[in-house]
Image (cartoon, rainbow, N blue to C red; front, top):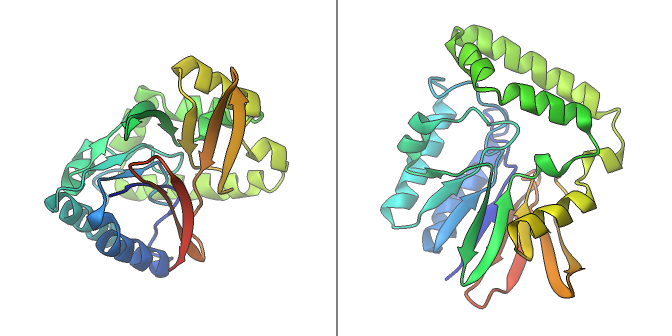
Length: 241
């Protein structure tokens, strides 16, 4: 058996091939797994659980089907879908996790998170993130009419795209010292995250012990998945959509 980790699918009605690939992945591979962990940005945007987008219903039904085959699904919010709530999670029959968590994977402690909080070289983004994660701000936003939320979300996405074009490669990546601090803080030697769209398995040494940072890939032309087997071997793989 295998435990699977994915992130950064950015599902939207404008990218039907990615949705089709994800649904196929659930039916072809995830259905046989011990568990599926989705580490954020499953959706390109999320404006509230009350959004009647048919894509959301389609995804919820597929994930609920996974649950019916006794495969648990766990979700950590990303920077795109941080407003995904308990109502939608219940439809999916998936478990919402905190923004970072140490889990046991076949006897090994592993820290999982989306990864945006590791980008400490981008203080402007971290300030914006803190503002948007304020429960009062979120409550005000979710109380707005759906069409207003759609306009605000579209405006923020456009502004983010323009801003990111001016940022350096270093600023857009995680800070190595932040990664080491997280590992030490949580007393683990393996961390898995997404967000940067730079899939790789990075080896490092901490306190004389081999440590690993696994970066999940984004779903663009190909799907991307990390497979961990009971012997704790890692396979970071891509597959055509």
